[in-house]
Image (cartoon, rainbow, N blue to C red; front, side):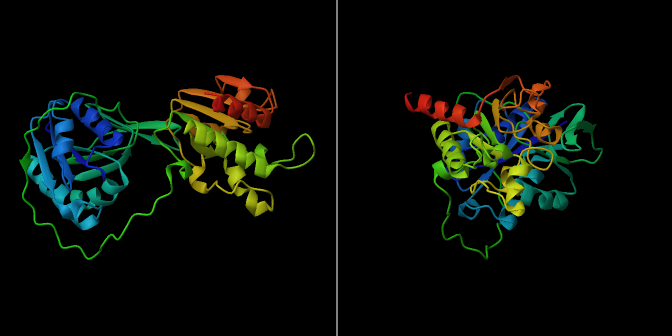
Length: 331
């Protein structure tokens, strides 16, 4: 089976970790061709020069500096036709998720997204909120597969000088102009998929504490302080996000995008720390891919104690976080 790994560069001209994961997954299938799309791709091609690709197809130009459906789909289509591969593997980034289904339709390919793994036996995908893993395959050729983050170990190898094959394509004229990019400061960003630690806040943070009062402001300060010191990613339980609709105190920086569990995300971090969460099944299902799970809760009989956490600290989360901040400040 001939395989094409289709990648795009980031704003700085490099390849993201998710792209390198897709490259690793494609290489596991055997000999591969690589396709690169971006404003300038030679640097990215040199970075993977030693990966063993039989050929590196490229489409580059100023029109591909920004993600746009029309230009991205045209560039991807041109590379796919040049490669004439039976299997097309690509990272499931927001850019490719928007453009590649259209490119697949143009070349008559079957396309599947949110794939957890790909092998000679077929593709695997999580079903029913990551509780069931299903295996499937397609007889339609070509078959385009968009892989979720964490589907494979990111490729690592020495850089070199890559020989590339440019693919000619007339990119459609753009009717939009990107004036600027507005993004929060790094310290304000709380969802960090590549962070080594996931810190999850539960509803207990905004409940009455042992003095009979709520301390939402202090809770917000403790949590954001630890996030800034550790550069951890932040998650929450649905109950905490929805407390505002019940007229209770809320942590102002939490949104539904932070939800972890059956009604939210299933992040992949090496370690996770749940604070003021009870560890009930709908929430714990979101921790399925966390390698090491720890929790802080005053209730020694909470759900985390029932083989759902590797370590349970029976303690007051406010006191633990205060001490944690003190220790981090001395490092």
